[in-house]
Length: 295
Ligand SMILES: C[S@@+](CC[C@H](N)C(=O)[O-])C[C@H]1O[C@@H](n2cnc3c(N)ncnc32)[C@H](O)[C@@H]1O
Image 1: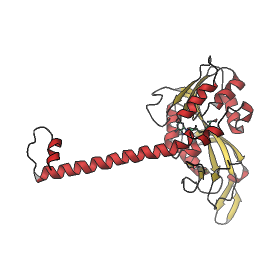
Image 2 (image 1 turned 30 degrees about the vertical axis):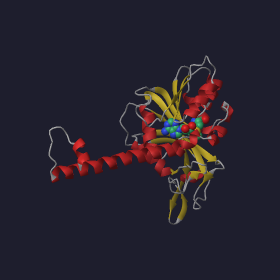
Image 3 (image 1 turned 135 degrees about the vertical axis):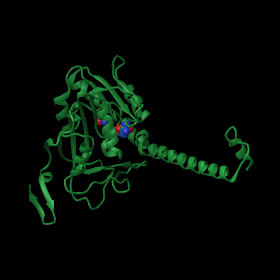
Image 4 (image 1 turned 180 degrees about the vertical axis):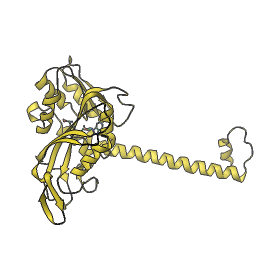
């Protein structure tokens, strides 16, 4: 018990059973809190470790051109990119999008953010010395990254399907977007199968297993609804998946890749929903026990 004396607050010079009990509770509490912090840090480290690996470096070895970008991404970017807009590219990896955007639209005001230092360093090495593009290392979910900085367009391609905290990711993107600006991101969708969001069941089979999240369409609406969004555009189509992707055997349908565009408005969420939707036909069929029926 003598070591407890060193922990005694000033003014206490006698240990009673009561103070011993209080110390025990305090020690137990702080050990529990610290182990939660350690677990959270380990989970964080494991979740993003793949992006600092050789496998990721090999996959993203050089920037792609505008022509090679996703069809749904180009569809929306053509509508929203104007000269002078400021862009935040969340999960910028090696900065491919920066090169594609300058190729298509000329000079842009661009910030790339990525949780992997390996990626941001490669991205910075790929740009011309005279370029104003900047690359920041950090997690968009961390409120200390980029502080209160806002942008006209906040976008993320290829990020949501690997991020289990999608609500926090979307909330952070909206927070960093100017009023009247746009948030653009993509998700993987099922027309019929329930959401797969369990790293044991849906994953990219790399040495550091990555989440591969596919949302049921209803869960996409829920994601938007929980952020108070009542106006959006969705453009998606069947796509092939990366050979590393593993999904449960219950999945019998093709995966849809879809981009979602949201305009950040100053108004309160509306009772009436509005969405411009282009998706494969299967999304417009009503599912019930009796089979498939047209809506
Ligand atoms: C599939 S790559 C994105 C590719 C890139 N957007 C493109 O279109 O070329 C996903 C990237 O997102 C980054 N990332 C994942 N979650 C992130 C987060 N919460 N904040 C910042 N970057 C993140 C990863 O480190 C990785 O480099």
